[in-house]
Amino acid sequence: MKNFLRIGSLIIITSYCLYIYKSSSFVEGFFYGSTLSYINSIGVRVISNLFISNNKSKFIPFIVTILKITILALVTLYLVKYLSINLIGFLTGFSVILIVFILLIQGK
Image (cartoon, rainbow, N blue to C red; front, side, top):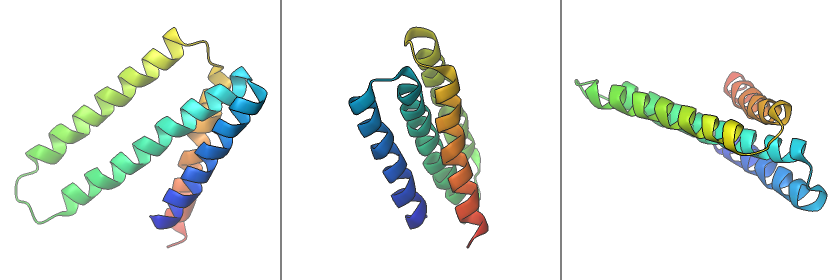
């Protein structure tokens, strides 16, 4: 998980610096997509730890999962609908972080 945090942070910081330097809508979309995917990946990790814990009740992890999905969906809808970001850049940024997350899990 430490490698994911480092690599994900590096991708987000690099995309933000590129956005400030270039002011491209694609890079802005990439930044927002990668940031949202980074938060999603951390949320998945936290929720999976809640489900694996020795708690007999799975109600709290279930509620946290529903809350996470709802918040991420609302943020995504807001970003796509009300900000003029490039949708292809958004999806690219989201996918890059997910690919890094999956590849680092495979390399354990």
